[in-house]
Image (cartoon, rainbow, N blue to C red; front, top):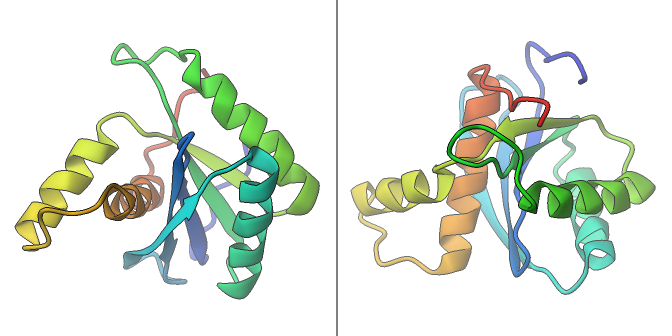
Length: 146
């Protein structure tokens, strides 16, 4: 796993088979903000869009959620993330960090409620979830190797 940088602009990815939530952090690790979501038609298409967003946002690394079971073990959905990462690696050479994504969607929904932005679309929840994943990474919560 790549070494955690002290300060670095990051792109967060909440991978889903229908939508991919996207967020970005500032270069100091103080704030994260949802950018939106990518409608996913294929991993190849999504990888191209993520790579372009990474260039546009001038990020230095990517952070992706790893879908683990409640007990922390890798499930079958981890394969989908790894397949996506394989496609992403063909078009983007940035380091990729993985974080545990358990409960990030429910945390995103609660955060949106507290912000007065509820009801929210599924895309808004996915983007907020990506911001939560970035915060987890910045705060040192890596995913197990799974």
